[in-house]
Length: 103
Image 1 (cartoon, rainbow, N blue to C red):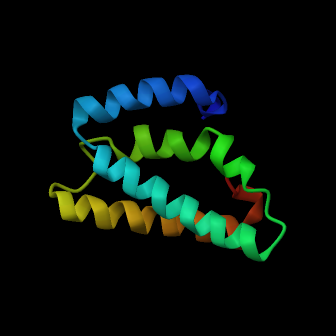
Image 2: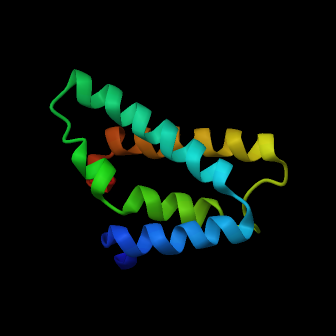
């Protein structure tokens, strides 16, 4: 996870990985769902949303871990559901166990 601390390399290499594995729909769905949930939290609390947008951990998870073809579902619709459930899980775990939150 130390590689997730630098946003630019994660984004550049992540785009290449997502292109090679044809998983942009999974990456975009995960990031949209995660940032949507973070935005709702930030609107209702003092949550520093800039950590979510400018930290590399969510992008690292989306581009490298979720998009990995051996562990992601086979069909497009299954991958979209997988991305939404993963975003919800990551967000919820950050609320329940703040010690392990992305920020």
